[in-house]
Image (cartoon, rainbow, N blue to C red):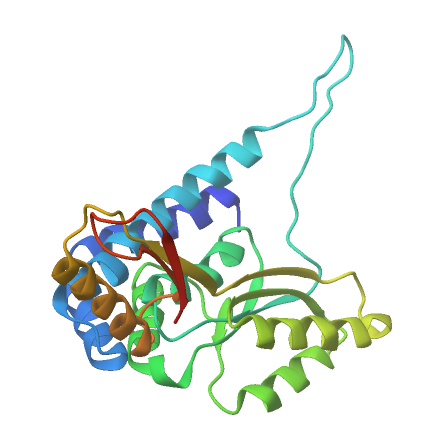
Length: 254
């Protein structure tokens, strides 16, 4: 399939999500990932629509980059998909990331084996329905449910494994990278590894801050991450020993 046709499928998916699929995607995200209507709207709808439309623009820019040609010579670069399949492992907390990790390589012409989180099966099904309604052919994105270790072992044992697209914990990502390295001699090509892992964050409290407002903000961040809705974890709190009286700083590990 030509890249223009692939682009049209995902642009249509963005339009469908902005219209008839919006409420269904948000509702599935609220049920599966325990988000409220505001959190679901900015994740499952707004961010995913942006992902799909921006990725088409990025793909267009990639294909427009061609080498220079001199007189009598026409240099041309053709971008091909990977020689094998891409394994997409997605987290439960963001519907948009789950869809993007399998949609982005598919947009570039690759075949995907997608392992969504067990806690995200409802919104994952809506993502599949959305892509099918937009015209994505069967067999491009192949969803697999089950034990993640067993699935990964089968995937990494295949000589056709060509790439990993991952978002999740640092510990899991390191183990996957190690497993791929141990199997490197069995692959037809060098697998591409793309991963994003959770980060550590801090809060710095200015001496003019109101204590009750600071406490509310900290509680919100801690509870938000306790429910697993964010990819950042509050690790350090930096604040003045007394608000407005002393200038010494205190550092508290959360």
